[in-house]
Length: 71
Image: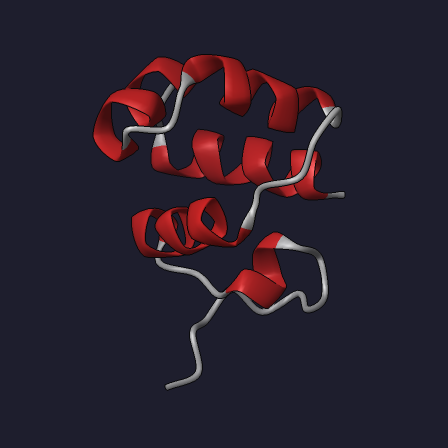
């Protein structure tokens, strides 16, 4: 589930895993593990991804279909 959402967000934003790694400081190897479904992001990485993509953690984890952040 998370891997599908990550793929969708990468495509929507038009960025590669390499660019995501460069922009966020998250290793390409870790991003690869997320994309393949071998791992889920830890809390700190999840926060970085939420900020980068402008969405909520619940959306990234597949808990809601609404990407908006409720603040």
